[in-house]
Image (cartoon, rainbow, N blue to C red; front, top):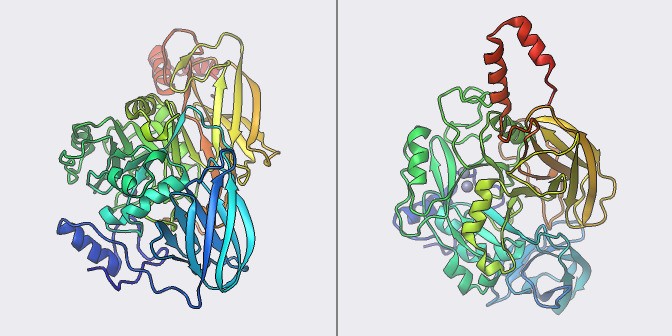
Length: 536
Ligand SMILES: [Zn+2]
Ligand SMILES: [Zn+2]
């Protein structure tokens, strides 16, 4: 039924709700219980040359899954087609391969050919001239970012096949996952439980990742990712309108461990979770009676960038200050091969990751729930406090000065220019990053005064955004201002300091309540009590 349909152009479909002719047909096919096949590509350009690209790992010499970008001299995307029989995901100027090899038809001419493998790998790029007939090019890329002990997870992934919009079929999706170096992909099709396992086997890329079955519970009152879920279980009721019933229903899904609030600042079905009419941005107070009991919330959704990069962090900080244990999450929400890159936004979860094809999912979920997670969209920011990695833990500082070791990494083709540390939402460290050429952008220890009362610490690194075709950040699709400055970002989750040494964590809200109770609203006593506190 799909033959002859024209492929969707980039941005042709409003996301994430289906629209347009293709999407309507796809939705009809899904409603009839079917899956959606790829739109047919137009015939190859003529005259066509055959370009063979081979990409190998620089250290092992083995072929490696990757993204290949082919650009014309002016920078426009090359008119590519897969050679007959080639197992590739191809869009204008882009081909993903699961085995490092790509046979591509394109018009003769000059091209810049680049290979990348997502955030952790380097970039190799050649200028080539392709005459009529055959040409070949060999490229080598190597690991640049050290992520040992951290599984690269994308908690938010769609396909055209199952979600009915975007342009990435299931077979193409597994190639893009291998090509962007995602080790723990979570299938989150709208209100469906689906498994990428058999497609990964069929396309020969199962050794590169461990597929997880999830669901984007897509409701009129927000979208929630839940995973892992049992493949055969009924998806939770997505028509419930109050969170007090909806969240327990999501948690009752067989197998469910992690529940994440998606794109909290975006508007869907007329509902924006952090709209100021329902959520007080300063205090994190729910103004419409909703309990924020989810395990995580997306700080980065690279398919739905924010005009104000830090807005989701500020909302999250206010929830942390209320004492909520909600993990910060990065995800891509990609429905596409190239329009929005899968795995661009991602979360690193502390777990055994020496075999990407057998990541221990339960251990990864334990880490997410405990906050042993790093949010990444182009940078990896890490923090050690008094010599310890202690995300999600309560640390008792031994001395008056607390040593915070900050490390920021990215491949050499990404730059970082700033790292900050926040304590209870107040910035206490702000360092420029001057040397962006190497993969370790910064590794420095700063000493800060021990807060007088309990405080959480979060480190956030940022840098100029990538706009080149091998890893372009896409503009917000729900902009809140006319100007958008693309920025890469990496963030830790909180480390909790038991600064008063009483062996327990008191959130800023709890501390404030204790002060108020102690002074019984006596203004003089209140002023005296507040004078004892510091800004953090
Ligand atoms: Zn969504
Ligand atoms: Zn989504």
